[in-house]
Image (cartoon, rainbow, N blue to C red; front, side, top):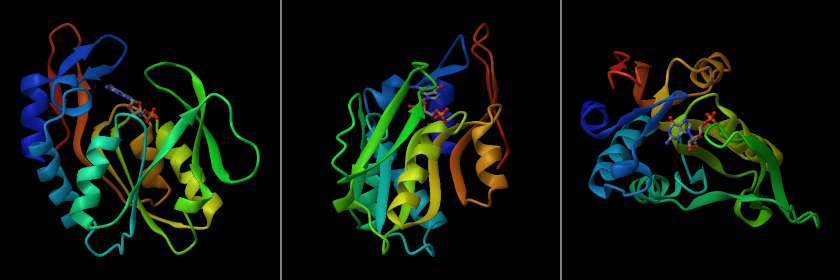
Length: 193
Ligand code: 5GP
C-alpha cells in the first residue's frame, strides 16, 4: 500500500536491533485518517472471508483494529497481556514472547468473546517472528472459532513470521513489507507487492 510505504519512508526511524519506530503515526501518536485507508484496503482484500470478528493484542494493535472493525461493521476483541492468569477456566490463554521486550507473557481472552461460530480476522501493527500472531491463533483454535486471515500493517520480511504463516496456508495480507532496513543510513527498502 503506497500510502503507508510513503509514510514509513517519511516518518519511520530505523533503530538498532531490527526495530522500526513508527511512533509518530502508528503506535503512539496515531493517524486515524491513515488507519481508515488501511481499513478500506483490508476490507477489499478480505471481502469474501465472512469476517464477523476482529482480534488483536494490546496495546499497539487496538487503535488500528478498532478502525478495521468499523469498516467491517463487526466487534473487535483484544487479547489482554497478564502476569497472573486467572485459573477458574473462564478464559482462553496462550503465551507470547515479546519481540521488542524479549519477555514471555500470558495473553488471554474471556470465553464470552470468542466462540465456534466466529470467523476471525487477526489485525496487528507489526509482524516480526510471528509470536504474537501464533499466540492469538492459539486462542482461536482453543475457542473452536475459525481463523480466516491475518492483516498486518508492517511486515518485516527479513524475519521469519510471514514465511511461516504463508507456508501454513494462512491468508496473510501485509500492507507494507520491509525487505531490508539500515540503522546507519536510515534506508528502508520495500518488497514489491
Ligand atoms: P512478533 O511477535 O511477530 O515477533 O512481533 C510482533 C510484535 O512485536 C508486534 O505486536 C509489535 O508490537 C512488536 N514489534 C515487532 N517488531 C517491531 C518493530 O520493528 N517496531 C515496533 N514498533 N514494534 C515491533
